[in-house]
Image (cartoon, rainbow, N blue to C red; front, side, top):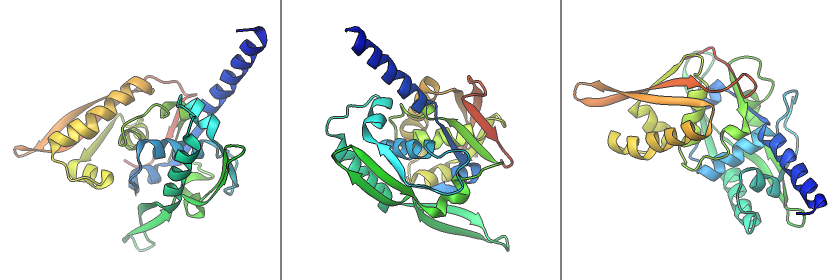
Length: 253
């Protein structure tokens, strides 16, 4: 490699490192009370989009999604990805996210939003121009408390469709050191009807393998029984990270 190409390669890697270090900041309510059946690639796309929101943004701006940057930072082949990501972005535009909250009288209500309100593809430049749904402003903008923030590099290597959901729930409870969750809640949030042995083999263990390998968390779990049956799972959460990678402000369990 000549000096010019070596310099360009080093410069590109430094640029990608900056992208990997971008922070993803979400309200804990969005993490814990939202249901959205995303695949592994769609979860990465959402994380990449949220990482481009600036801390001082007060509104959602038109956002450039550079397909080459996304593929390079996630170490994915870029060949043929324009058409593939075009399809995935359309799915995100059409997909809904359910968020449960309480109204002013304390009654539980569910609201459904889209992740994106608009997608514009620019084939020549390999750039998509996106607009995040305005309904998500309370969950992604101007967050001063009860939020979780981590670098994009934490989630860029996930392959299982369930890992991002489990990681978000774990990281948002890092200060508590544990996450106690019922099997019914896991089924509800992952839109599955599995018995425990399948939840363990298809959701929990593949996700924890990736989380322990790729992220700043070290996680194990304990099975809890009600009578003879497994009823709940308790995840034990430890951090391998420093403050620069993760920031959690928690107010609710």
